[in-house]
Image (cartoon, one colour):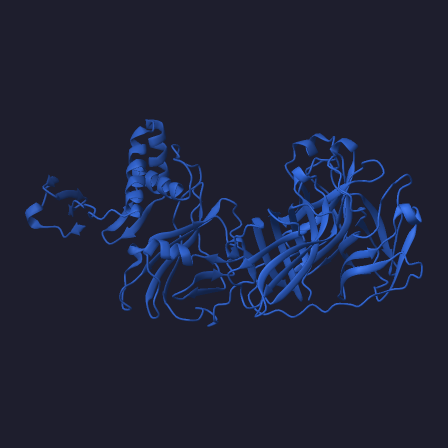
Length: 238
Length: 355
């Protein structure tokens, strides 16, 4: 765990789960942002000071996910996120500031560049959905498991939808996913419809624990979930 | 050009024709008035113009400012030259500092700086000095945000050339290294108009110089012979596993507004930042053929976060970035696999590359 005590948007101290090596680090956590704070309004981007012993002072581009406080659907979008001069920097988007405090999920890897040489292929982990309720089926997934962290992205052919199976809670049970991953992630639960007035995409949060993903939809939601739902994250093990 | 003292000019000071005599202590020095050649390349014209402008600038500053420069020059003491210990004048210090400030893209400084932060040496891992590449790698950062890299070179015409350090010309000024790399291959060609040849002797002066201060003092001096492999480790040149906008072939269906992609080990990861637009058709994505990529690219796929641009409401999409660089195909495909596709979108982040 690392604690980021200071930032440029008057936010509280943030604790992130971390894995660090010279070339890669993985961070997991959630940052709460108050869009009414004067410092936030003045900031061009969000900057959180990393601990002084944080070795990686600069990273290539990574990502974070903004989850707003918009009623029911918590619309959001991915944000650019990177390390620069010993700070965790996050792109600032004001589209949902009027809904009050919002959250930024960090479940990302940060790497360096400048490598010359050959590469080894990435070994992937095969997973099997154990649910017998028929709620879940992968369209495609990629799962990479290392000794210290995992990368998991999946988009679904079948995924629980409010109109057909209600609000949950739902649990995705899998064979093969590490049981020592405990992380909260954003899940994109769009129904595939486009609304010109809408900003962002409906999101819900889910938790991986004991190799299972659990989540639920907010009461009163319509058309959340279904095919084309997906998630994408790195998580520290242990 | 300096001439030896002559008995005929003993105790003589002043100019006669192109010859100027001046007395310093017990010695009399004769100088011939130097005239620049009639050659007028853009670079030479720029340099002369910069010098004239800077020299004129000294006459326009206030007396108080002039005294400041003189005082600063005196604080630097003396340094040895072929004619003995000399000191720099306030005027020369003003011209030197402001010339380098202008080279670094800064305006003229009228007041003498309180502190002079001299340029300093560089540290690097390797250097390719080949007919195709002039590339430093593993360059350590300077730590001073105002520092820029100043690189001067002189490709000698004879392998036995010596004392050519005063012939170097500025090839590039770079604000920072690109992850430790400084690739000046194109800058070298632009400057000299011809590539290096194997066996050619090259003089290089390179340093970190504070662009605000502009005080050139210490620099790394390299006198190296061009060869096929790298100078330090004798390795063949290997490009980084990167894809940039320049290799994408424009087409009428897709438009790239920014393409920055690079692979890193671990075992194979990619970091990227891409903005693209489908301009015609109905496919949920964009496709670009490319002019050729480094050999390490074959069939590289990442599944990553993407979003519509601001005017399209930031809708989230899952974007598959597929790079093909093999006998079957040479193209890059960006496909929406999840979420809602919008034709003008951005995708970015760090992900594992999978097959």
